[in-house]
View 1 (cartoon, rainbow, N blue to C red):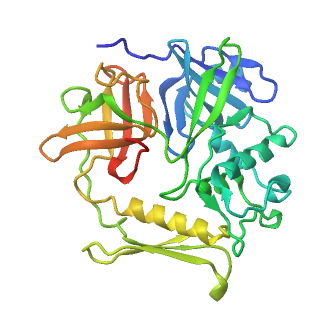
View 2 (cartoon, rainbow, N blue to C red):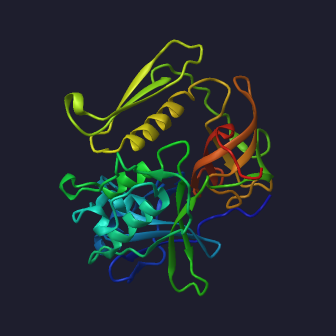
View 3 (cartoon, rainbow, N blue to C red):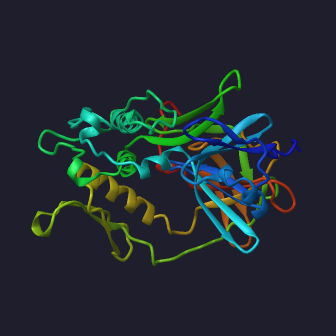
Length: 370
């Protein structure tokens, strides 16, 4: 067995000044991880006495938090929430893309970078970040990959606008850019620079998708899967027809429907998106929602818990990777490629470090050249 990847330390830093507030924060019940096209999260608990003696060490909305293991940064983000109750002082944080949920386009068209007609969605994401970080006290040092794609937004008859009078949320706009089956992926990344004197905060963009098909690692019952996955089957969330409703009122309200016939009883779901002002965005959101709601059928595995073993060492797999998965128990018999859509590491778990990996059917995606 490989040496467990136990975090050496948790660090916090003032966002605006860059001053290190703590280089060894004693966080208990630590959990952290990344996700596909989302910010990922971190949670843990502190001693109230520590916070009372130095309240600025975890100032919410103004503090970076990082997890370092084996001298490498594994995760970074912003502390958003702290709650004290009894002897518990809980902390919740999210990575870089969560920041744009707190920022709005008050100037319109991303400060003159729009409007958009047949615009590369990757460029719109970069423009949203560039605008947010161009405002005084708004630069958190995030860089966005220069990836380009053929996934576009806006047409001459349906121009994509970021109108200041609608107070558009930049985070929601980025979600719109990655909300379809044929749209880019992103994930948040945190690393030391080469000299280990500064932190590199990055939005990794993938087109046609993030990740790779991995033939060097696998997830297997009896090898590194340590808990039997839940076999859940529910009709409450199922739908093969999704209607996405956007801006407007009455007959003028934008609407797009994504539907398939698949030999099952017709079930429908309405997705209310009152701030979305483009039909192409609505169609992509409807398609994505329908795809997700059709996955509540038996025959796939959506979450596993693994230990650190040579079969798939911690840190060897990334968001978006396809990993061959073998799950066999009294309820489930599954063998096939699964795509990693998220992971949460629990370095202080009972019995040793473990990682909860969230999976999706890999056959929903295509690799160039694979």
